[in-house]
Length: 286
Picture 1 (cartoon, rainbow, N blue to C red):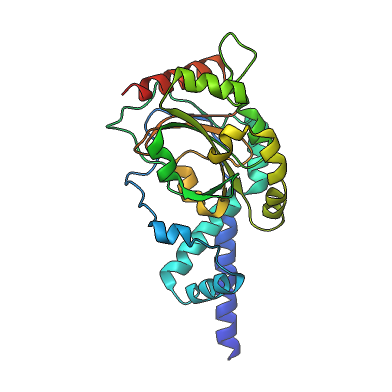
Picture 2: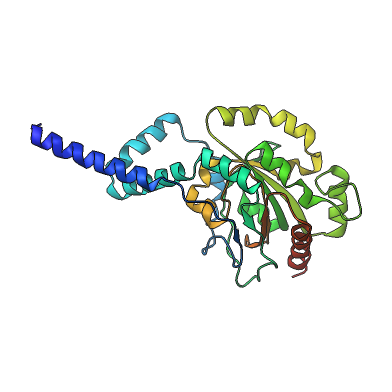
């Protein structure tokens, strides 16, 4: 390699590095009011049963070769670069800072639930419940109107509990007795929880804590408490559904078509709680 070519390559590399560093500077976080439907414009594809039953995580070797091959595909390489920039720009430290500043309230909930004709779709994910059964969210949603509680940290797990408090009671819908009350009030409504887990050490810790979860989650909800790899929800999809911070917790009302009809996050206000259950009542009556 000539000195001239080397110098040109080095300048090009430094230019790209500088451009990337500029791109990953986080913008000041803005808490916005949700005023229009969020989600995917196209209904997610159903995963074939045979493929679902044989679902396995890719091996480290296959993941490596997939990554290696993508290096020679210009479009995939550029898409990966942009994805990494976005992850770095809004990564863990940024999320933690935002969570502390907003106290988990990263958006303000819509003042009413979205009409069926205007609503958009929640992504379809492969999930595993506390009975170690693998399924997909699209099938979970088909059964009933779903109040979906999402978290990936202990803070997120705890912060949304008050959404499920029962009016004029010290109980809540997440307990065994509370869930029975929910079933008496709504015969076509279910509560589902989704724990988004990381790969690596945190993923291993999550797997080791399953025994503890089976003890604290009522047996009646073991089939609707799910875990899924966080990598199944890349940044773009998370932005589409306003899952904008991984430290806080979220609540979605999803109808039987898989459409997002209402959403909330963080510690609920009295109005948030009222709107959640107004949405549940309205959507379940359709």
